[in-house]
Image 1 (cartoon, one colour):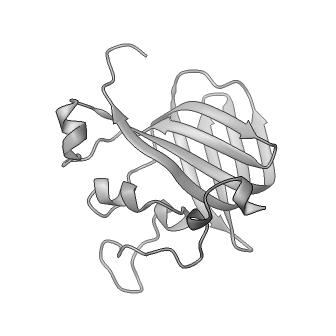
Image 2: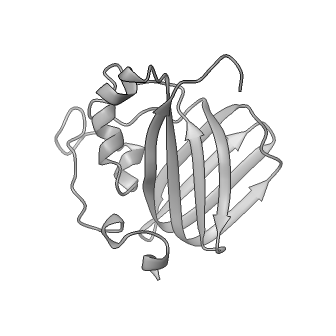
Length: 160
């Protein structure tokens, strides 16, 4: 069933791990620890997961009733962005997140342009929970796996 949602290499219990800041067994858990294919995001942000507070949620898509896509702009931009981003004078990082094999989905309110928060956490047994809240809009979902569909950057103008 997983094959219908994403490439086989994305869902792996043995994905490469990037050491957390501070290292050792007491290192803090980052949201990227629960998300497959997050290595690119970590690399762009110097080995740490970017903050998911004060993001601008751009799109929520429910696909086949068993998967969601959540696309949002981060509030922060990397100190040392990739050369191609710098060359384009990009100033905003956009994450396209997938959550598959859903076991729970609740959406309330209407998504409107505004700043809100996203949380990504492990849930038992062996799943991932994603919550997004912007004003009166709230998304709560749980699935077997989450992955970064795309991490990109663009130049945000003065208007949305």
